[in-house]
Amino acid sequence: MRAPAVVLMVAASALGAPRTVYAQAAARSPTATLAAAERAYQDVDFEQAFALGSSALSRGGATLDESARLYTLLGVSAAALGKTDEARRYFCVAIAIDPERSLDRGLSPKIRAPYLEAQGALSMYKRALLLSAKPKPEAQRLAIHLEDPLGLVRRIQVLTKTLRTAAFSENSLAKSGAVPVPAALWQSGFEYVVRGVDEAGNTLCELGTEPDPVLVSGAHGARGAAPGEEPAASGRTTLSWLPWALGSGGLVALAAGGYFQVRREQAASKWNSPSCEHPGATRWQQCASVDDDRRRAQTLAIGFSGAGGALLVGGAITYFLTRGSGSAELRTSQFACGTTGSLWSCSGQF
Image 1 (tube, helix red, strand yellow):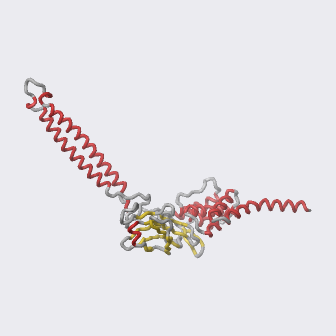
Image 2: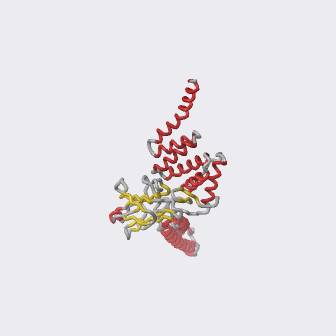
Image 3: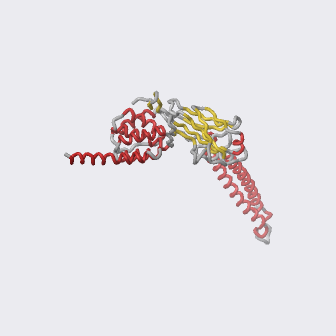
């Protein structure tokens, strides 16, 4: 009777070994917990993947990418375990954080069904959540606007720092509002990061990151967006003067081309006139300087006219490329899931 007992103990040990490895990895940090949950999912241990994913989510501190991965992992694991309603809610949040996120088409219909239902729920919202920020130098405030009708974001973190320091100072807002920015920062320029986070502090949407914050120029011309302007999504400075400069240069060049065209016609008229046809010498011998003037004026007329046309076309193209960039839309994430009490929920017809 001892042998079966030994076999059972060995089997139990073999089954428990992977979970011990997961637990040891997860104990290191929230990021390690997410990695352990993903390894459990790869090992088709959905129960452990769901448990570790839930632990990572409750620990908080997940970046935007980690939050999207966590909710996707929890949605897949919940669907595999038959928790369809929970899977749908997790998928709603995952898709909202990253609208481009998709599932492997090779997954079973049991897992894909709640995912497709979540997609359908989100399709009714063009922008269920929008986070933006605008410097207000006249009020020495950084105005934060949050459109969050479903109440996903529990807190807004606003981090600011000078261009010369490495550490950010933090302010928190419950919803839309403004945070004070010292007058000295408006003179020297400053950087900021805005994050919408959940109850545990996981990032759900953000403007800028700590390694790559949004830059606001100071009164002395620090690089970045001018005070009072919303930074462009790409981080490029808006050059609203460039189209007009190119267009003005094009008009001046065309005018110069027209002037030299008139000079060419005058020289050509003199070249063909009787004053260059006296007997005893060739036309070129009599009016060589006139022919030189004609050729030079023709070359300049062609050059200036071509340059003017190119500058006008360049100005038009630049105008349309930069049109409206002063109020370019900032990086945002869309959401269509909310909370009911302490539970995540999604609105829509399933």
